Image (cartoon, rainbow, N blue to C red):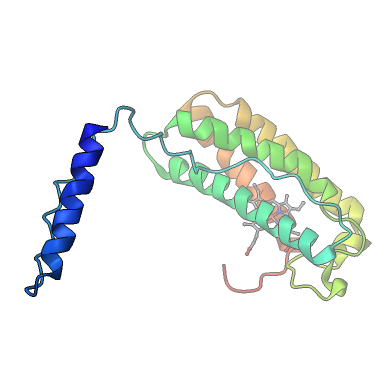
Length: 187
Ligand code: HEC
């Protein structure tokens, strides 16, 4: 209480001084107290390749097709990890294993991503070709082929087995793309 009274008195004195003609220089501010953090900042959240996201209901067709595209991009990111390791003399199996497991999850999910009305006729931008809906048996076989090859890839526990299986898995992506995906630019 005493301290507060004293501070109030000091403030009054300053205010009075300020009234006396010469403008008073601003009072010096105390040095800010820099506190050293007690806890370290949280570790950054992993931003690596992900498993497939749940698809929305196809009621909003544009949103649905957008989500499908995002999922394929995420599949591509997993495949990039695998490809980089395939090219390495010393593949990092700690990175390969989760990416290969993810590819299998995409393979298992993608057969359901092409409900009626989500093709090029919808008017939305897409790389999905109309023949997915007219030749579904061939499309489904291409899905099954990726599933088979990705199961084998996910089963690889050493670098040699991974390297031996990777081309067949990648080939099953191309196998479907060659027939059912429209290349929009030369990717
Ligand atoms: C059964 C068919 C099929 C298989 C198998 C398949 N894809 Fe695709 N993929 C498609 C279709 C269809 C599209 C276009 C989807 C769209 O635009 O809605 C696509 C799109 C993509 C895209 C987006 C292309 C772009 O230019 O934006 C990527 C990336 C991709 N696929 C990667 C892969 C990878 C990697 C694999 C293998 C691990 C794979 N896909 C396996 C059918 C397939």
